[in-house]
Image (cartoon, rainbow over all chains, first blue to last red; front, side, top):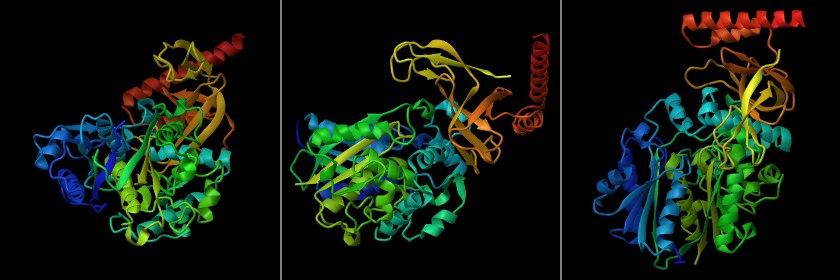
Length: 375
Length: 142
C-alpha cells in the first residue's frame, strides 16, 4: 500500500461567521494548499453534512470545486452525519493509498448559526432513527439517556463529566481558532440550565460555523497517516446491546491500530469527539487510552489536561473549539498536524510523535479513528 | 390490563426488536413476527426542557427493556422518584406509548396535551373508553 502523507493543513476561525459556506471552505482549502505548496490537486473530497437544508445548496462537491477555481478537478462529496470530515479524509487517503491519485485536497465545512436553534436541532436530528424521532428524540435527548446509564451503571459522577468541559474550555483559551476562548469553572457547568436531564447546557457543544482542510499526498512529508479505522453500529439506539460504550468506536480503533502496527499505549495525545462531555469519558475507554472505569478519575486528576500525562483535546475539542459538523473531523486532524509539526503555539504538547483523532457520526453509528505520526 | 406490543424476532440470533422491522439490525435475515407484554425495566430515562417542535415541555423519554427481550422507547407522565431498573407498565394512549401505571386522570391529561385535531381527540377518547368498558366486561364474565 502506498504511504499517505499530510503536506498541508488549514482551517478558518470557528464560531459565528457571516461568510457563505463556500467562502469558508475556500478559505480553509486555500490555506492548506498554500501550506503544501500545491497549486492544483489531482482530486478534491468535500465533506458537508447537510448543505441542502442548512444553506439551500446541493451538488456541493462541484459547488466548492468550481468556487475554488478547480472546475476541471474531479470532486466528490462524502457524508456520514457528524463524522463526515473524518470519512472524507478516509476517502482521500484511500485514493492515494490505492495509487489512483497523487495529491488530494480534503475540505470539510458547515454553516448553521444563521438558523434558529430549534431548526438546527431538527436538521441534525434527522440523523436519528425515525421511530425514535417520533418520540421527540434529539441528539441531546439520546445523549441524556446515555449519560444517565453511564452514571447509574458505571458510577461516573456529574463532577467528572463537568470537568471535561472545564478542561476543554481551558485548552481553547490558547487556541485563536476556537469558538469559545474563555475559561469556565466547574460551578458554571454544574449550574448551567438542564437541557436533557442529567445533561446541562455546558456539557454540550455549541452550534458553530467553520471549515478545515488537509492536502494529502503520496510524496514524503513531515506527517504520515499511520492508520485509519471505521466502525459502525445500529441507527436505533434502542437496538444497542449497551449504552455506556460505543461498539463503533471500539471497532474503528481496532482497525486503525492494526493498520498502524502500534497500540494505544504509543499515542502521545488525542483529539476526541466530545460533542457531549460524557462522550469524552466513554471514548477514552473505548479507544483503550484509559483503562475501563478510570476515565472520570483521570480527568479529575488532570491526566488529560494539556500538562498531563495524556493531553486530550488540546484544541478545546468540539465543546470549546466548536463543532461545525462536517468540518470537525478534518479540524481535529489539522490540530494533530500542527501539534506534530511543533506549531501549536502556547498549547503545544511537548515531544509529541503520535496522535489519534476520533470522530463520532450520528449517535455513534458511524465512527472513525485516524492515527497520525511524525516522520 | 397489560398492553400487547408488536415486535419481531431474528430467526438467526433471537434478537427481539419493537416495533417490528423487516430485517434483523445485525443480520440480513427476514424477521418473524412476535408480541411482547407491555411490562419491563427502565434502562435509562431523560427529561427534555426544550423539546423539538410538536412536543410540550417537559418531555419525559425512557428506554424500557421489555419482558421477553426487546428494548422500547416511550414517553412518561413524570420521572419523580423513578430509578434505572424500576419495573414499569407500558400503556398506549392514542397510539403513543407511555411508561408507568397511569390513572384515568393522568391518561386524560396526557391525552389532551398532545397536538392534533379536536375530532381525532374525541374519536380517540371514545375508542379509549370503549376499550376500558370491554376490558371491565371481560373481567366480570371471567
